[in-house]
Image (cartoon, each protein chain N blue to C red):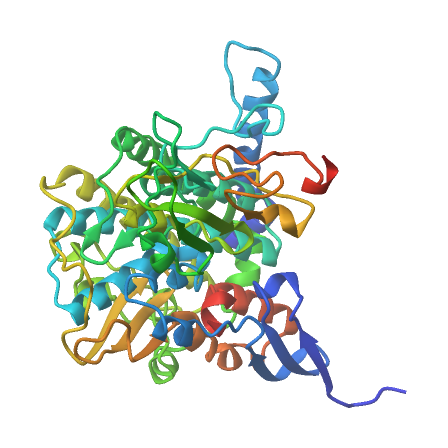
Length: 366
Length: 167
């Protein structure tokens, strides 16, 4: 009557808690996962190949659509990689505004993560609170560049326009209330016994495993490795900012939650510093009319909310478009750690593990 | 003992509920009272949504004071467009020195609203307007242009209409 057989099931690709079209092949022994393999490729659009056929200027719109939750961070990586390739120096004010918007984007991305991750595990309330604040960040995006999600915020060489009138008011309004909002989320979750039972000790990924798999971002910092590209290889105006890199040593889902909550506080701090120390001056460098690549090969890594996003560009001298373009997507590389985290655990914890990865399938499949 | 007490008294759940209760009471006691508005949600279809001045909506061709199309067919927007949605046909018009766009086609269904075309335009002859309700029932409604039945590049797109074929 009772067969002692293993059962194979698919989680996804249309499962609401896989954050898009991720399919996870699971082999179950009762409720225990014995084998777990993520299957990807359902959202492949060939972004890298498309960008090779378009000019340096046009390629930016595709980076918006890779990780659509953190479009500004993707834009920043793209424009900085291109500036390296084309040999352009950016004015200081542009760097500050870029840093400011990038940190806003980090907050927005982490708020999405907080809302959806808590909803996956069963805390439905936080979703509504988190999206209320995200709305304000999207309004700031809209005020700056005219679009809310697919921002195309920056330009190679600086920014298209300076900050709009009334922008400071929006930022200060947001900063004034944001710390109390964070406290609200923490009141709802941090001490909550159900939340703790679902997250503490779940989906562990040790620092050795994380480094071996190339995991970056909050996943790595929750394992106790204080590696943040904003500190290690400062770009934009991060070298002039004073902020901490929050770390935890528990390496479980709860630690990742704590790291991301602490990161949002640090982001608010960086935004405040950007607003205080905003230099005057132009926002756009003098560019040649037609952009042609100068050097041969560039790899530029930036810290996106999900981890290290790197752009690898190969250009021929005098060429109008990149010869080869590759994205080191943080989601793609972080997803490799899913079998390590899920195998041996319960099937319900697979959802917690996927949630704590903070993946966006648009970026993984590209 | 301490742990046992903590299990018995659900202080953590009460803490969470207090957040919900605070917001509930704020809305409950201010609802229907005009003095203290406490609405996060906007009543969008009834109350028109406000957009920021830089909002990127639909592409619109501009005319100058004499009612002439400002576009001079430099083809900069056509070249810069990442999705190639703009098609311009160069032509001549009597009494006009500059080239005149005989055809200016815009396929809105593939437009990604990046505003590169407006940025590239050296003659300020196109803008992205503030219209965002661009849904339509037929595919033909998305191909806009300067000529043809009901095709319109100068004003706002009609909303709430079923099709061009209807009128």
